[in-house]
Image (tube, rainbow, N blue to C red):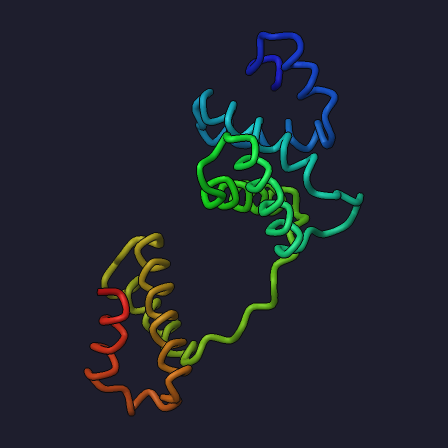
Amino acid sequence: MFEKLYKCRRVLARHQTGLMAKERVDYLSHRARQGAAKGTLLNVARELLVISREINLIPGHAIEIAEIEAAAKRWARHQQRRHRALTQKWSRELFVLRAKQWFQFLGRLQKPEEKAVPFSNLINDFAIYLCQVRGLSSVTIDNYYWHTGRFLTWLDRQGCHVFADVSIKNVDEYISLFA
């Protein structure tokens, strides 16, 4: 895979001899099969090489989100100090995103415990309705599910624990948070 991406021998050697080369090739091949463009694959390859250097990868060890975020913070500071980035925000966010995707692909991402979503039975019924009655796509249903879950979690934090007590005032308050 690296041979398809790089012509310069030094760059090719750096990728071939870098940490977790096989795992990086596997992920790049996966992305190529998904139809990623060569430019995207070049960016991903470069990012994975950095991630493999910045995160202490113990064989068989699952990577926690906190480890990824700490490494991303270090990398973003490094990028800013070297004047390769004006702020740390985008370097950090891209590092976290790419690392999560890669470790998820490898089956090595330790996901945090999911908190129960309030009124989850109602959200599930809503998703079934959207699918079976409205005939919406799974992507649209996932989007509705996510937004509805956020709203109901917010309601729960406001002390509204009975769905019958929800009012239009609650909806207006929630929407005003994003205006």
